Image (tube, rainbow, N blue to C red; front, side, top):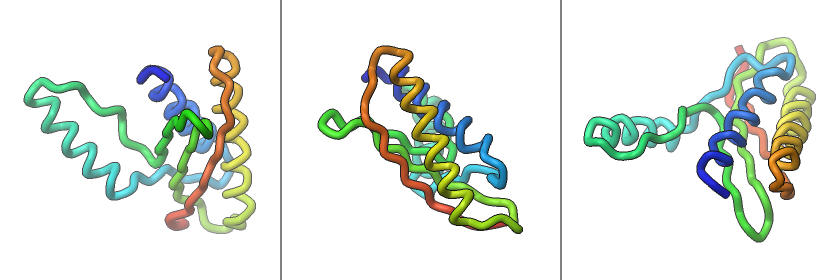
Length: 118
């Protein structure tokens, strides 16, 4: 997988998660925040930039396909389990569709973590 595919999978997953009713935002993990800080330092010294930080981590594992982690903040008043299931299904469908359309079909596993509600 090229880094372009990885970035596109990342963006596809983020769009799909944010379209689910009840999702307020995506929340970066601490590791993502640290990577963003390091990225800014790399940019200053002329190294390659890191993709935009969101609450999505996408990794291609050759033997098992794509693993996508989604960290989201939900609106209060919605059943967390229902919204999390919808996020999982929409992200899996969106990423699978993207991969198939670009000639790289692979299994997609999605893990959703709800970090808080607003």
